[in-house]
Structures are given as C-alpha cells and as structure tokens.
Image 1 (cartoon, each protein chain N blue to C red):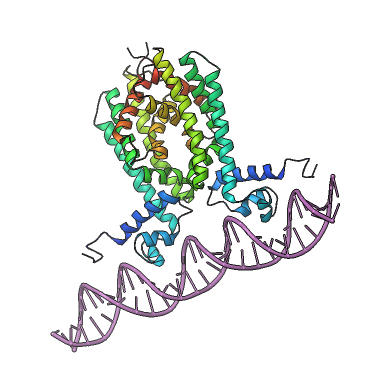
Image 2: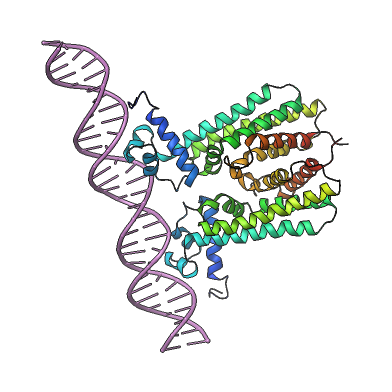
Length: 196
Length: 196
DNA sequence: CACGCGTGACTAAGCGCTTGCTTAGCATCC
DNA sequence: GGATGCTAAGCAAGCGCTTAGTCACGCGTG
C-alpha cells in the first residue's frame, strides 16, 4: 500500500498540494519547495510530473472551471420552467463556490498569473458560463415570466453573487453552504420576477 | 517645480506607485525596486518614508476602507425613506468600487498579506460597513416597507454585489460605472421589496 | 532460473538570479 | 552644524529550475 501505484498518483498528490499552498498563500508567495514538501517529495520531484509552477496553476484552473461549468449546465438542464431553472442554477452554483472556496479563490484571483495563452483558454470557459446564465434569462423574458431589462448585466450580477462567495465564505463558519445557497437562489428569483 | 516640496510629497508618490504595482502584479509579485522606480527614486528611498513593504500595503488598505466606509455612511445619511436609502447606498458603493477597482482589488485580495495586527484593524472597518447595511435593512423591515427574512445574509449579499465589481469591472470597458451602479441599486430594491 | 539492461520515479546539490532591507556616505537646507 | 532626503553598494536569504546520479522494477535472453 505504500507503493506508488496503489496510493494516489504522485502527479495528483502534487496537484492537491499545490491547491493547498496556492489557497493559503497565493500563487507567487508559494514556493515550489513548499508544494514539494506538502506532497512529501523533494523539490526536484515537482518537475518530473509538471513542467513549471505556472502549469500547475493552469491545471488547477482548468479543472476548477470545468467543474463549475458542469454544475451550472446540469442545473439548467434539470428544470424546464424558467424560475425553477434559475433557482436551481444559482443554488448549485453558489453551493459549488461555497464548498470549493479554496479552488475557487485560486482560479478567480490568480487568473493574471497565467500565461497569455492559458488565460485565453480559461476566458473561454468563463464565456460559456455567462452564456448559460444569459440564455435562461432570455427564455424567461420571452416566456413572459421574467422582468429583466438588462440581460447581460443581470446575468453578470447573478453570477457575481455566487462567485464572490470564494472571497468571504468560511466552510468552518456558523452558516452552512446550503443556507447561503438557498438565500442566493431566492434573491435571484426576486431580482427577475415581474413587478407589480 | 522639480523640487520635492513643490511637487507631490515623496511619501505620497510612493503610495501611488505602490497602488499601481500592487494592482498590476499583486503584493508578493511586486518588488520594492519596482515601487521605487515607478516613483522615480532609488530602491533605498522607499525605506526613508515607509518602514516595510507591508506597511505600504496597510496604508493603502486603511485609506481604501476609510473611503468606502465614508461613501456608504454618507449615502445612508442623505436619505430617510428606507427604499431610497438602500438604493442610494448600493448605487454609491458600487460606483466607488467600479471607479476605484484597482485600490479595491488590492484591499480585498491582499488582505491575507497583512500582519495579524493590521488584519484585525482592517476587519474593524469591514464590520462597520456591514453594520451600516444591516441597520438600514432592519429599519426598513420595522417600518414595514422591506420584506427581508435573513438580515445578515441579505446585507452581505448586497455588499457582495458591489465589492465583486473589483474582480471584473473594467474602467475602459464599454459599460460605464454609472450604468452598473444603477442596475445594482435597482436589483437591491427588488431583492428587499415586499412580495405579492 | 539467473542475469543484464532499459526505464521511470525520485533525490542531493547547486546555478544564476532576485528578494526585502541595511549601511555608509553625500548634498541641501534651516 | 544638525536634520532631512536621497543614493550606490551590498548582504543574507530565498527563488525557479537544472543537473547528475541513485534506486527499484519489469522484461527479454541464455
């Protein structure tokens, strides 16, 4: 069991160590020696499995964005009525950001540390997430069940609410993720519901 | 005019250079040599006016939080009717964060780079901002013009919307700060208005 | 079965450079 | 003649990453 193939792969262990370190001290303040020692390896071992420190960040960023995109896309598919759809999307998206606030903080705050090529790729994921939210709002307006003047702006605000959780949400705090997610989902519905 | 007392004081010039550098590359990725050269001085000159690199960050952070607290406090005082009060507070608070997104990003994202003592002091400013928002919501509920179940949670969400502007708002983008601020203020009112 | 050999995971040591900050000294002004 | 504001030079420490080499293992061959 102490053997390398039976336990978690070294590459994966290094990724988890990188997430720990990046979340705790930020990308630039994290040393490759720190990552290595968290993974129980020598500094040089990092470079056996990953090209550079930045590529470690990029891998974390891709995985994080794919997971978030997956969560919001599935939520949209699982409902048909616009208000229920929106409620579920915001609920799930907020839950993900609350429960993965460490990864979330890395991908949001260390975006500028990526190379231009990697930044462009990540920007693509972000556009997909935004489009997903805009589409649901548009359908709701078409169906006459949403009252939204500024589609793009409101979509951004709704996502903003969820994403900003990575800044302040504390998994060990008194408020469970489900409670915050529920509040956000309710607020989202109120923000888009027809007015008197 | 090239003389030091006639132009902006060296201490102030260093602070502005620090804001530029921190906003552009983050606190840890910024070197004291970078700050010095942006201010047109030698590396050692930084330490004539500021004790450490961290104290430069702390000064920026205090000034930023004081300005934001001032903006939201004044907005609350300038109106008496709760809905108008809330609208104005969110409008001004969003405007400030959009127009000062560089400073805002520094104070929000580099919070952990402060010493524990400085962190505690900054946390005090944040509590004051939060209390200001909570008080207005509470008064509105008391007066029967707001329908808000989760006071603390809703206050946090409202502030979240504004603060998250520092993450994505681009002063050179197509959307003016006033437009986003107006949208946020409208959404805030809808989030708290009595339901059918 | 024994043996040699290639392969992949890993380490000890270290290279060249940069970091935050200090020191010693100099010009200017009151 | 003592502050004040600044610079040139540099120190100790730490940085990302490389190099050279060790070790355990799988496998084809005699």
